[in-house]
Length: 112
Length: 111
Image (cartoon, rainbow over all chains, first blue to last red; front, side, top):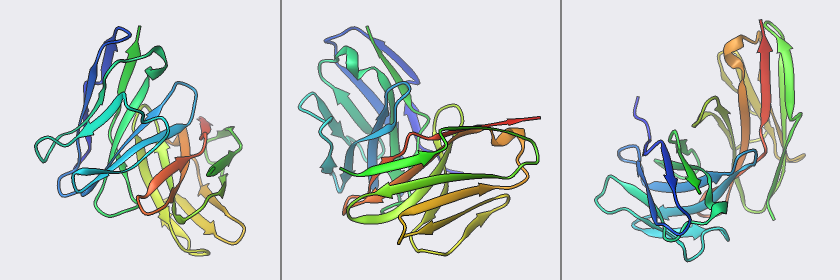
């Protein structure tokens, strides 16, 4: 069964460094999402992406964040200058049509 | 602000018991309600509900939505230890299908 994959599974970085989290959505899916889950808290929406552009973003998704689909298979989330509070599990999701979203295993980001 | 509330927050049962997990919501531009099971990492899709009163069923799991009273329930019958997980309720809203999640219900099934 096709799955969403994410790399790396765990990323440790120093505050102020740039990180890129990578996702390979399920083939033929058209809608892509990033969510994050701070330890002990709810899963929170960050951004949705369709037709090579951002369709919606949350207040969390400020100028430090960007997304890209560089080659038709990968979907990346970049954080330009990480802060301690960016430490969280980041989930990528994809959907063939709107509504049913399939999640990847997540990348645990630790900012020191 | 969209809100999704799940109850109870945690539950401990014995194998063979039946459990009912609750999810209530207050959102604008409702599209659908989804249930996920989260074991170690990735939320795994269980059900998507869009219409009131129509039960979705998969094995021992079933779910129903009440759009008038703004809630959904997830039932698990004859629970097994493998059902131990966090069950997440999420409501899909708006033109871009953003998901708003509840805090999750931690279910522990004891042998």
